[in-house]
Image (cartoon, rainbow, N blue to C red; front, side, top):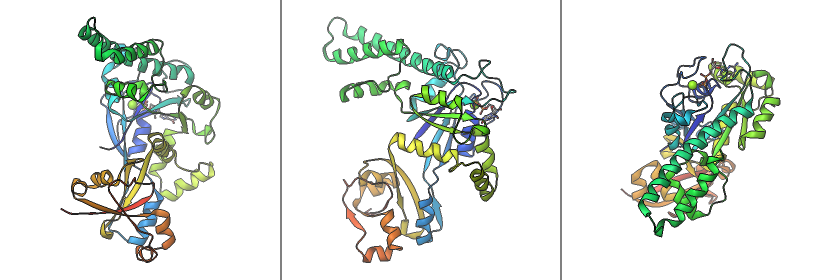
Length: 362
Ligand SMILES: Nc1nc2c(ncn2[C@@H]2O[C@H](COP(=O)(O)OP(=O)(O)O)[C@@H](O)[C@H]2O)c(=O)[nH]1
Ligand SMILES: [Mg+2]
């Protein structure tokens, strides 16, 4: 399954605009709350210059980037956890995502209503965090009640879970986040099936007016202060528009404004760092150069399974060369001559930039 990042935030902060830019999809964007009734899942291609460089050596028929999925969720309003707006329904949607990206409005457009009359990122973040905490609180309370009924007097094997739940209850009922609580491995394991929203890895996008690029302004400073997560400053509308431009013109425009990489790339890179992912490549007999995503530390046999279940089942060995070594050698043939390809077993941990050829039997 592809990794999923859920975009959350108040209505009219630019989630759908950002989603469209990220995924090239065309979900309806409109200047009033609750346009996004259904959640939208879109696939974003992860830009990676190495793909082209490898392809230049291999001349494949196809170049396939790796992907990451974004989920666009209807806006959260105060009271969402109690069923205001679209209520719990969409909070449920984000329980499945691997990470959450909170979009915070820092753009001013007078014709687009904000849920409150003034822009105040700090308050907006608080509203969203409180709703997430309340939704988690409801989950914890439900589990607590069930356990208490089950154990009656004797806590027995549930003692640890009950203690943990009571601790979580206290934190969440004060509007706190579970993320960052000091928990031991066992406690984390107990907590996992609850799938708590405030426990998800988090990123933040400060969606600004173009004028605030590239370095931000006092609003983005406020976001950085309150987000408790990495903050990416971008202008969603500009990102969406530049996608429509010829590449060179978009690039020239960016340079003029001092924008090094497209905001989307920065967001995708930040997602990679947050989830501790690595990219590896395959060249499939020269026909297809392709990038894949796995969590850091994934063994070769699991990486093989990502490509094809047959490769996992019949795994014999992985033949590996690092991207840097391949570039230094200038071709696979020369790399082979110089002994830069190495054979690894099923437990070899895939490294960032590895070019992997799986030997397997059917
Ligand atoms: N000026 C400006 N308007 C934006 C920006 N991003 C989104 N908008 C506008 O804000 C409105 C709401 O955007 P939308 O993406 O639907 O917000 P959502 O409710 O968070 O999904 C739309 O009219 C967008 O065109 C931005 O960066 N700058
Ligand atoms: Mg929307």
